[in-house]
Length: 423
Image 1 (cartoon, helix red, strand yellow):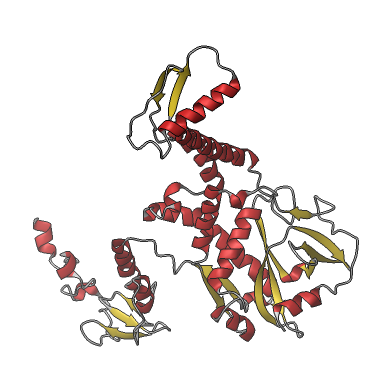
Image 2 (tube, helix red, strand yellow; image 1 turned 180 degrees about the vertical axis):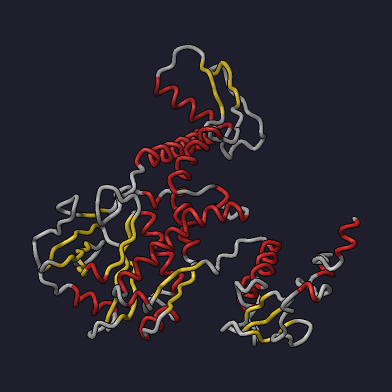
């Protein structure tokens, strides 16, 4: 059963005029903001930067449900890849402050896909004591879905128990539009006015117009092949206008831009892909990661019962987000692999290298120990000493080196107590 068939089935729900009642509102309704937020250049850039970062999140499913596993190993629906799905959903969330994901299913109720829904407004309805959402679409008939099959993502959730509060950027948009209009007008006027002339005596409006046209035709038109400008006694003086590039006051421009950056939680360097890893980490942890957590929790609640959640889990991680310097990647791989926090192949993935056969193993400093996925010791550097045990009483064997790393760190581990005491 395809996506359109699923919608048709959902539209056949039992209709009711009764709104769903929550603790703080009797008629929970969500409406998108009618402002032209996405049409404004700077705001669209902010939305794009966030959605672009979210599109690189990697979906994971840990569980045994075959349909869900196939979904997360392939694509969320027949029309989108996971990156397009995440980009679309993040864009809707950022612009409308509320985004919906609906679960597509077949006649037997088995999950067949996930769809990010863009609607103009949504109403919570009571259908036989069950919460349903009625989505009014930009085109076509309304779509209705039971809330149990809907994942709701929201921000600025203050007024409604179910939905976020729409953006309110009218003042900032007005400033941005006024700024752009002023710049366009100044450039147009500056490029049009070429000379300033002063006429002698009183001249009526009609004569003034004719004299200006004659002056322009004789001196500025193609008939003037000499390059010389002349005028008669009608004009007291004619002064050329110097054309300078028009720029808006940088302080005023920065003040308006900062309004937008503060609202969307981003900055100029993020938008221009010119940030350091510290700036990127702040942007990721403060904005992208919180969205990924909300999406993971929302999908888990929608896809699984409370009992099924114990053995099934959906998550979105940042394995593909590698906005790190080469030195930071190297240090992380070095520190994490020899402490059994990642496998060799996971480290190679961070470095942009392909997986290698036998690379799905952990390494534990021993110096060094190789362990399989179950934690069993496979190899210890210096020979197969996995079964070797330290003496029960180290004092009986003062030459025993507990650390095994003297050559690296010049650490004698108390082997030469006499020398140490004398120093």
